[in-house]
Length: 452
Image 1 (tube, rainbow, N blue to C red):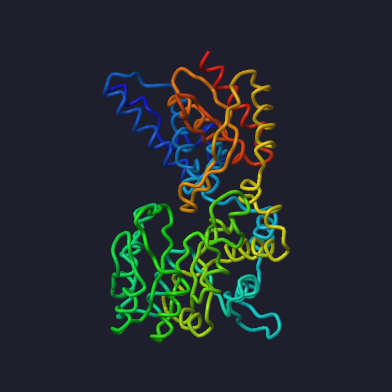
Image 2 (image 1 turned 90 degrees about the vertical axis):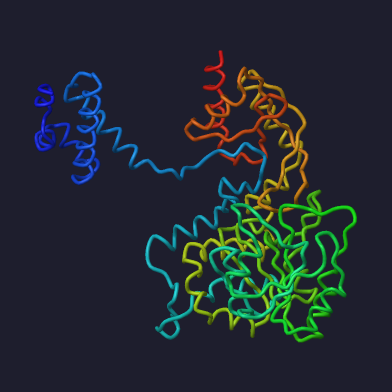
């Protein structure tokens, strides 16, 4: 215990040259806390038998605390997994125009809720609405922070205390434990299930519509598919039945595409335009999935219904911020200009030919002087197009411990996310962004060196 008396005080350490350097780098309050934590650690370790360290070691420990506290857990990664819309990796990368728009509008003030013509307060909902209505043909639109919020807000505004009809085959749960029935109950709507898990008929809806109903909800199956002995009425049939009963129809598309995915060798994903044409009064979808923009929930449809949604108190709690609206507007502009496939990263990836992917893969193998180029498949991900794949080429690397290799790649700077197939580490060029090859190859070279 007497040796503990030799420990310097916090004030003494702060007055040293090393202490002054830490204050300049991290500020005085945080430096004080780090030094106190370092001294507490030294005391604890001394009681376990360790010697009292020199001042330099105390500062090293304090520096470790500072780095630990200030290192961001949200960091860029290289996605070599082959999953285009990787939910855990942030889904859709933004286009250059979207990034530039965010930077331009976030660097200073902007007209988020200011009308330049009148000099008075304006509405943030106008910024993306005109683009959305022009693209989809809807009468009106509203943007919130994600699609779950869009569904919750719509049900709260239009169906609180009322019955909402939904097929049992559409009571889905998606990532993160998000369940459509739970959101419906949270909104105050009363769930009215029709049909069975695999078969629901138009007559089931028509019978339910004989009761007092506030809304008919059609929900995309998202990340699963029912096959075999299956029946569901079309959206157009549901629309006709709902409208004959004087009840609005809402289509929750989840992902929401503006382009026909079948053009790229994938199954057909229902588009927003198709839902509206089929008679949906409201369509909800995400901004950061097949749209290829920022995280957002988008509601398009009839003006009268959108107006009621905008006026609901919950609308303020889930509204989109200026960065979301900036990126979304830039992304929508790509579609209006007919340049989505060229400018939006996810469509660039989806549209990549196997030949271009093979060439890139062969280049990686040549630089690394190891690995085999093999056939493989990419997936869209993000709850879109379940079981649909795109042909690709993979760089397959045989390493002694594949799981340990993945761990080493995740520890790279920047981290590299790969996958294992047939006991080999495989990397898919489809989802590695242009300009990331050098960093990817540097990380792989370190992996190769560590395994030798």
